[in-house]
Length: 265
Ligand SMILES: Nc1ncnc2c1ncn2[C@@H]1O[C@H](COP(=O)(O)OP(=O)(O)O)[C@@H](O)[C@H]1O
Ligand SMILES: CC(=O)N[C@@H](CCC(=O)OP(=O)(O)O)C(=O)O
Image 1 (spheres, rainbow, N blue to C red):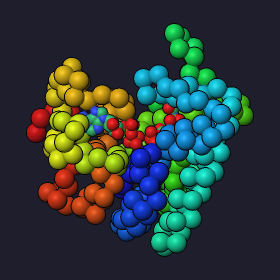
Image 2: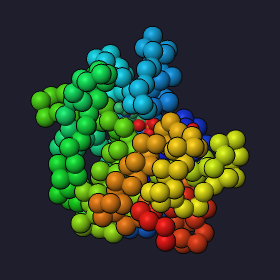
Image 3: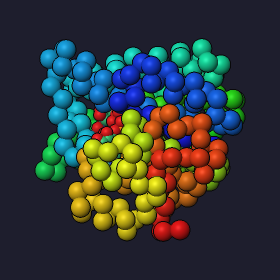
């Protein structure tokens, strides 16, 4: 099955999003979509007087920000993506981690930084894979917003790349899972200024090297950490590429993005 993550810079662009959803709707077999939306939440937050703040790629989520991201992720983005997929003949069902107790989490403990209502997922074993499989078996396509819950009535904000990785790992015992991170660039680049400098494959050693040289930075670090975590825990394949790359997934030769591997092939 396919687990696809779509990032905020594509969600923010109606034409690119529509093209991506057309391709996603056409993917064969069971599939699941995880969306981000950090950029849209920040833009709408600023209009409401809420300043975005991040530490190491994770948003500081105070009580007001939690309300904001709940409205934006679970409401505006999730429901519009579901409606667009319905129009394309894909029977999507919108989800957060609270729905069907799909993704329980715990509020991140305060150490040097107080992340507020940010949720940490203990591991794939805490995911309600039974409920997600029931949806897939019913022919539905779950569309996850990046929200989890603490089991005591509070939603929590969780990085969308992490949600995609943990869901892929939790479903790996039941399906041959291909996890694909789609974003606005063609893949992991060796030169941030050159869109065509895609690195075709990255293993763990190369990743260390790229990090040390400052070639891989910012949001790409948690994305790659999540990619390797998924591979180590039974996910069959992890790919990072542009949103327009979905039609090439069936043919690995045709895929022009970055393939993540544990060790060099
Ligand atoms: N070597 C690299 N190649 C491509 N993108 C990179 C690289 N290093 C850092 N990045 C940054 O990582 C970002 C993607 O991660 P993230 O901000 O989490 O976005 P999203 O969640 O939308 O996928 C890119 O927009 C880019 O700015
Ligand atoms: C805790 C945390 O950082 N949550 C993220 C969730 C959204 C997200 O991951 O969006 P992209 O995939 O578009 O970056 C945030 O609020 O930005």
